[in-house]
Length: 405
Image (cartoon, rainbow, N blue to C red):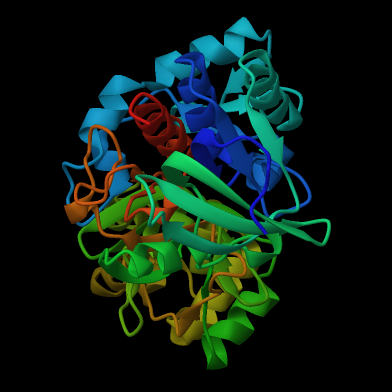
């Protein structure tokens, strides 16, 4: 079964953002590089990201934008290959892009531009990329240093040898795009610890009356502040037929655990108490429901009236006591909601947890006790906030490993 094809200096498992960046960097150093991709095409997650426009990085990347059991782990790689480095690469290929809110950078035309950039760079430096490769076995070579990788392609099984093996297989998120636990299996095989995994950047679901309310409001989006476990994000929130989504919910889902409450502030830029009390003086004849509808969608106000203040429906502001208006304000700005679950890996943009960074070099992404074995990208216990940070981690960790393989 041993192939007569030449061995490689570096074999990379996974042709996503991290794997391709690693391949380019290593080949630029003269290394012979092979990338094996299980899917029928490379960069599937790149292609679907950002609504097909790929939020490829962010102007404001800091270590605080990442979740890791060791919060210092990301620093070296982010400094070695910065957002500005990837922006320069994008510009060198003439790819038009735009800045959106919070420093997020998107392709102006299509995410295909980023995939083409990566493949063009691979071609220029002689990287071999094979798709539809089903890896069946990874082992440390018994007869020499390095690793043997056995895989099937077009019903033919072959075994290749390499000096350095890079695991860039991604994680459990969105299995329809190739998400799997294969990288964790390899880590476990070689005795590396795993941090418990769960879905991140994912919509939250409810049951009973809250779910019914979300169904009635499905499609409504508004800017809110959502907080949980000491973290807060001001972004759009979207009501769906399952519960809540939108950027603010995806962000807070990284910090929420089952059984916990998320708190929604519907008027994040307003002192709601002062706003209502002032209105009572300046617009005394206005009904509370009418006044609230100046700031919030009528459909949402109707739901809030039924939920919190049915006794105030139809009442004018001047007929409502100050204490009652303060209670209304408090509920507008502190609405506790208890999700029953997240939507899970099916729609999660990232996987929290993964290969523990305790045994991984933050400078090279190498497993310290396993010469020639590297882990990069989402398979590691590193997850970024929404907004291009996970792609930047892919570029930075891939580049760091590419310098070391």
